[in-house]
Length: 305
Image 1 (spheres, rainbow, N blue to C red):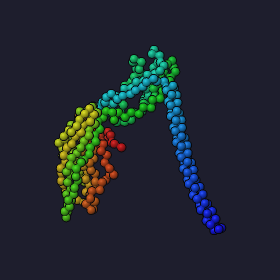
Image 2 (image 1 turned 120 degrees about the vertical axis):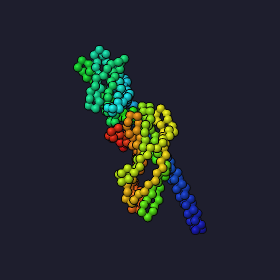
Image 3 (image 1 turned 90 degrees about the vertical axis):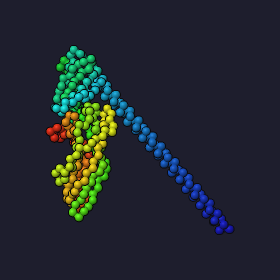
Image 4 (image 1 turned 30 degrees about the vertical axis):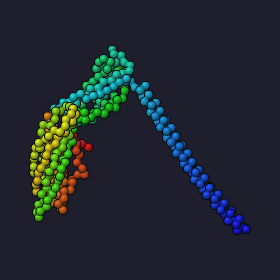
């Protein structure tokens, strides 16, 4: 009899433990859900606080800003002097047309501005291939100077100067003999020329191959213009050349294109050394498809990062 009661008690105890474990699992799930809800609400609250703080800072900056409007734009370039013309204007909230004079401060230089139709304007000649820092604008009236930060950083190259992206598509194969390695290029050079509506297009293009620093091959591919719009033109020209190499030789192949300004855009297609096993080992981890830019005298004007 006692044995039956003991079994019954054990079964009931086990059932209660199972129920307790189930309820504990439910409670743990509810706690996790509650924690997630609290964290989500905290994140939403923090996001709202950050948004409100940003808005308050913006409103305070606008309230303290001396200007109601300000703009800049690159309007042209001087190829010979390698400068760009920067047009900028500011509109002060409060000024006296008869007394207030304005000046813009850039690259540690100070240039007076001219008042026209409620705008103080200036045209500045800045280096074409360098960053220009427009720091502040100053307003002076009756000996009192008020200064407003602008913090404009301008690189006119990206607005005015064409950009060339040069790539090679096709095969680069090698055949081995007892003494020589025959290397073959069979494919095409592809050029994306962003003329930006300031330059009509490409005047000339050459493929140059150097072996051990000496010119092995120079070739003018027949470029086919596949596409053109107001900003970019896409060209393609075939390459087919075979030559012999030795182990240890260095090879460098590049494309150089010339625009109507006489500037040269050089893009490296391959730069490698032939290993003792006869395989080309790149001398650089990668080749930047954006081309370097040189002037007509061969002086480097721009090198991509």
